[in-house]
Image (cartoon, rainbow, N blue to C red; front, side):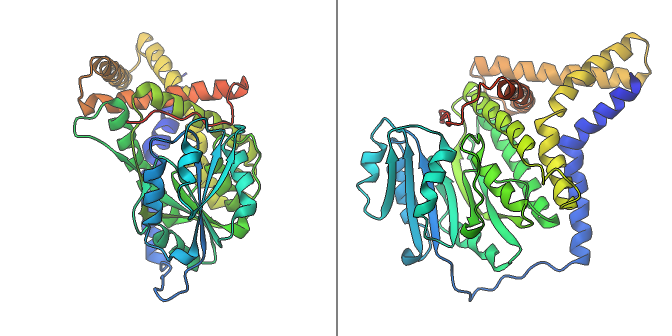
Length: 388
């Protein structure tokens, strides 16, 4: 029981904190031994196709198109495609008001991956940029993404996702904002070491020629598209100066819905990305993939429960003082989480209590997502979360 406790505790700490520390030191060593790739500023810019999948986005689609048209990139080298998959509002009608935009509309809702597959034959750019309809890009986003393709080893480039957080944020805003700041740091170090292990749909790009067909029932398409390219031996770069901005989920219920869907998709991707999980192909990629993704999306949430139960049993059996300290620490952490839940229900906004609450919600979502996936209750059609 004691051995199981310490192994489980080690894996939890490694997943959420330890991997970050290890990555940091490995990157330091690499920087000492290997010179970074140097970009040049006088290269010919590639042609770009910017792909936006939209579902019932009439409230924001005009702002999104305006933001896209104002991007700092040669107009004769950028193609804008919007796919409206099964939208029942005025999204398609509003897009038709912009002759610069290629509209691909179908009344049938088949899911985001099916919509992307439908758009692929219309793409003319050497680089394809994927972005969501409810996010806004900084003006230099495309320029910052495409510079990485000077390196022939790079097959995809992930941008940064930024959550707009109010000073007096609720649980979804504070927790999601903190999570993405930490996640962005890990992505930067992942790339500094070797490669990212996925990409967020808010903003990422690929060499169009490297696009690998992904199953139509894919739940998290962005992750799978990028990782299929990594499985071919190419690097997924990361560029923090190309970023997509969006508001947080409207509340924790909406954030939970989104996280459960991602978790179900994470389990699906683990079962399908067999090359990424096999160290005999690309050992560094496998190390990063398992450390950054697989542990989070599989055993770690269950280990949190196991560690709490084992710790309690060891304490009841008269365990050493260290076990009492660890158990009390866990109890206090979960009490903070419950306090965050109480404060959210009363609309009392104190960030310090929302971080533990968000952590618990995130790990519960993984368990719920795994259950949903194996019960085949998760549709590939994306469920739009309400945002602030």
